[in-house]
Length: 194
Image (cartoon, rainbow, N blue to C red; front, top):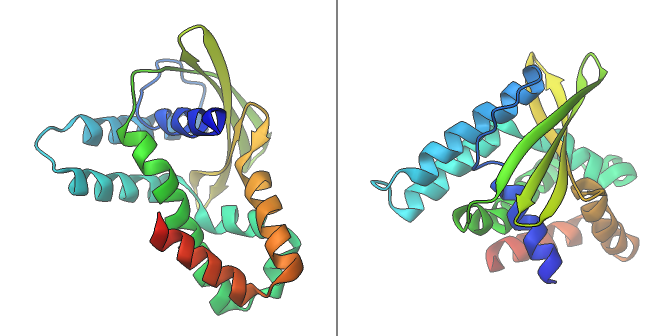
């Protein structure tokens, strides 16, 4: 449990600490997001609720929640009606925001270094980073897609574990026994409870 919370905190720390090493447009995009979140997190004139809203808005610009949602549901995506797909994206986004927001606001000075950018195709890239938490180095990779000229994150891999794959496993278990509507209800309850 502690390791999971640490990784969540570390994942979010990337959006709070700038990096000097830049490799290209995907990495530039990550740095821009980091810089903007840092400015909000450091702004002492903002109330906590205002910080949360501004950070949510910035994260929404830098993540492609539609691609992330489609990949997370995998083969089940087509079983959802367009309306159910829209609701899934909405609830999943809110769940992820709620899970990670407190970690962002609890940032404690971990150092982030963007180390490598790999272009997998013209429209897909992976940006590798390492987070230093004292003596430990934790690799965090950002899988990014270029959509309408903009680079956005569609998956985050922490110590070799993909966020998309992790949630896909959880949702596959639910969908093996329940309908898309039941999954949506479960997600809605988790969002309200977090």
